[in-house]
Length: 279
Ligand SMILES: C[S@@+](CC[C@H](N)C(=O)[O-])C[C@H]1O[C@@H](n2cnc3c(N)ncnc32)[C@H](O)[C@@H]1O
Image (cartoon, rainbow, N blue to C red):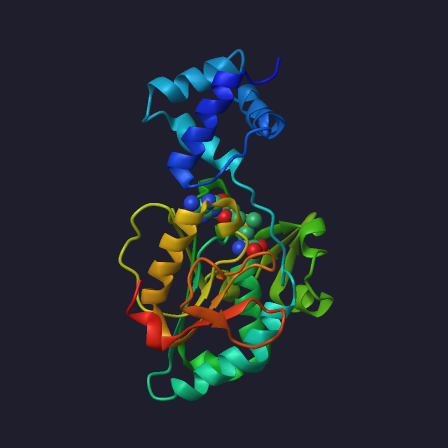
């Protein structure tokens, strides 16, 4: 039996309150498909019992499991290619020129999922910008999904995951084979710090960022959340820093302070200093 209307409405409110994710009316099939597998790990007989647990116990361990399954963790190595080309060809070179004295770069991956995005950048820097080996480069990767974060920390990927976007030369150079899986070499894995952070709740104190990768996450949020988050990013980014959004995302209509860095397909935005203090 599928999810009832009243349980679906509760789940919609639940995921919006917890994660800011908008689950549109008509997506009952999605809630059903994502929540049903949880029943096998539990003593709940049906979805109604699971939802009753969410309704009555706001500290239930099932709350975070439900958030986990309702998030979309789709990702891949070097996803969309163009952002990584932008990083390699102009974003990082310009930042290197600007930070020659301090020799420090802060990069934040604000929806890092299972880790392919931050690890792609760590490998890209190792491969193409050896000069940074003597710099203090901080890769902070965060996500709301504890399950995705656990997987990301392991740096362990199935063959089909490495087949998606990872050049063969990178696989050979930066991974070791372990049975049917591939494990990132320690020096790449340890370069990235993974922490839990909900973009739609109060953020912990974060250092000023040179680069913020916030790709393919705001598509799930409502207008108010998008505005709020972009406002916080505007304050966090250094004046010459860059924000990367996903290919289907834009700051247009949400925050006029941001504009595309170049007319390319990288999704790279800069925050206009003239407006940085407003909003
Ligand atoms: C589609 S993945 C994007 C992964 C990667 N950035 C990319 O572009 O390949 C979206 C990620 O956003 C995370 N997410 C959803 N809501 C979130 C929130 N409120 N705070 C932080 N992360 C969130 C999900 O857990 C998921 O891992």
